[in-house]
Amino acid sequence: MLEENTIAPNFTLKNQDGKDVSLSDYAGKWTLIYFYPKDDTPGCTKEACALRDNFPFYEDTGIEILGISKDSPASHTKFIQKYSLPFTLLSDSEGSVAQTYGADGMLGTKRISYLVSPNGTIAKAYPKVSPATHAQEVLEDLKKLQG
Image 1 (cartoon, rainbow, N blue to C red):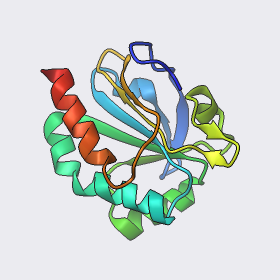
Image 2 (tube, one colour):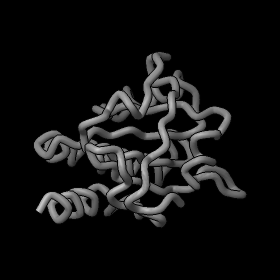
Image 3 (spheres, helix red, strand yellow):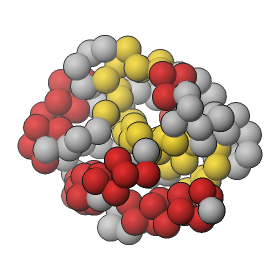
């Protein structure tokens, strides 16, 4: 895991539309980077749908959401369409970003997240994410961080 109060390493990955997206594109904004094992599996679907259901609150607080897994852009497109996900999913097919962020594990991508502040530092690291409660946990943490 990366440490809180350190700079979040920049990366560029393909989104669900096959377009390059970089973390630096979100400079000046709160950004949730969440790593997950696989599209359309029970835990990953629960987490994505909880983020979707809380999305109006994320919009109100100005948080951008970037989901990252090894799945292809085409797989991400199907996942987004099936569950009406209103946020960006990125394809880390080689696992290099997961490795940089400490999300690579023996059994695949770990379910971890980082809340990145507008100045590009990691404001909060989440080493063990619960799919059912993570979306709300991030909102509560942001309220504390914003004072």
